[in-house]
Length: 240
Image (cartoon, rainbow, N blue to C red):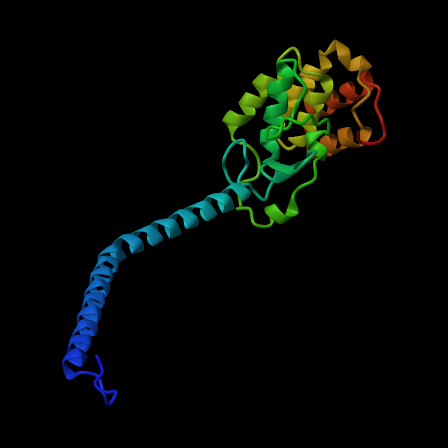
């Protein structure tokens, strides 16, 4: 309250200052409490940030690994046949697998009497697997792997190749793709020689037969079988 000269009563000044001081004191105490709470939560916040960073790195590593591995066998692509990455141009996306896995996939589906869909999106594909182009961008980053297949894998292919429902086209595509595997080529040619439907098969390109002949120049059995298969089929001069 002010006096007649307009000056505030000293007692009121003291009360006002004390009130402001108490108010600021309470505010400071509240801030100190808030600060202690935030300080106590810092380890939790830090742990959450570290966990989020770890999960992000794991997701990135997983995506990077998936980009460089076959979706069927879950192993890294190779830079040599038949482990090279080849892509199916499906309706919505390019789906990439190693060539040997696509061969196995087609053999399994054909042996069951089914058409061969893309393993990822199930879109049908009719391309010969031996003609699928290598994804060179992926192949350039692929690890070195010994050329050729393990004996156990070759035996599996030979067993699958003998399934009665397999068409001559599927068997020939397998032989031509893996034309450097002697035992597989030998058995495959024998199977084709015995196949009654071979006479109606017009899908053996002459140039591909000659490639097999060049691969085994000193093997008379393979040479005779290949020529016999060629003569019994209605050969074509170009690849399918």
